[in-house]
Length: 443
Image (tube, rainbow, N blue to C red; front, side):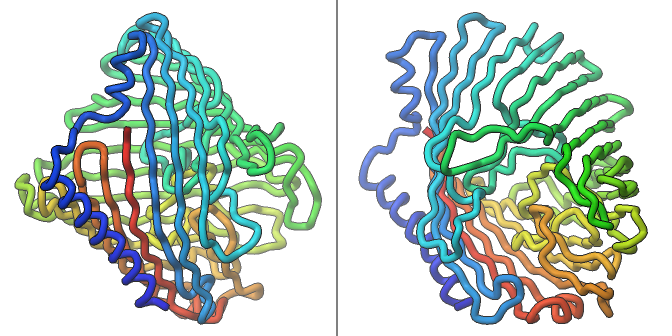
């Protein structure tokens, strides 16, 4: 099945490229999006755009089980309408329809399917372009930094939005955003809405010129759930989790740049105390600015785990609402909870239209009494009395992105999960493979 998944995914890539290039040679293909032609007929204060995305993906060795495979396709269309009655005021509406075909498991996960619904609907006022006060209210995306803690999760077929109000103030040397929000729950049977009591508040300060070639971002996020959580001794109660973080981005010289992100969590989880932390660091080396010379990077990620299930202290880091895809491996078997991840990678702009990336990961548990959490933050493997080894796995990934023409991109990738001693002990120990090909058309 591994070979079948790989062949199907990359056959899809080859066919799309071939058809696109043949069409481009045999007929004149306009580089102007369809929306531009439509917008010519609309009033200047009204504009239309959209996106269609098709992805074929498949897994083998699901959850470490031999002979458990799946191969399916994901289809998503978005239709956007922007209304600008004045230069400073914008109203944005986005409808989305997401469907999955050929998925084996039932019920279908909410990340895969949600028939037509209102994904975004907000009103935004901006005092001036990139300067002064701004207010954005309604159903919207929230994306901060590299989306390690809060993001729109665009990789999934349904993605994520929030019912929120966000107020910002920016000047040349700094910017501040504060917000109050509730995450929108995807439900294919009814109109999507947020769940009362599951709220997220925050403040994000940007200092882009704190020092030469150095940017400092600092933030505070407060997550609440009332009363929806269970303590280690089984008591139902509320959760109040505060995350304080600092993100530093800079360059040592023209060839070496770096990033460091430190995160500390405190609060309560029903009757348990929250004491958790996480860290991200990356060094990127650019051999040359020429397109055909690869860049190399090394990255280390760590998130605390729970030392004991009975001490009334919750040590497992809460990754909040991240865009977690491919942050710690393409298979998405690792999230920012109870983990160490060493990542060595290389990015190669092989051609002006083609980008390649090769990655290697080695993953360990932070605490053996705790388990392994996937990119969605869900527990997927655990040894109740504590694992004998904390080495989870190694993973090798390869990705390719190809721009067929303006507004049309093709991406394909393959990830191979090589089990370590923990994976073999906690599951049936099978290797995991993941392959996909994805076509995105913006119109």
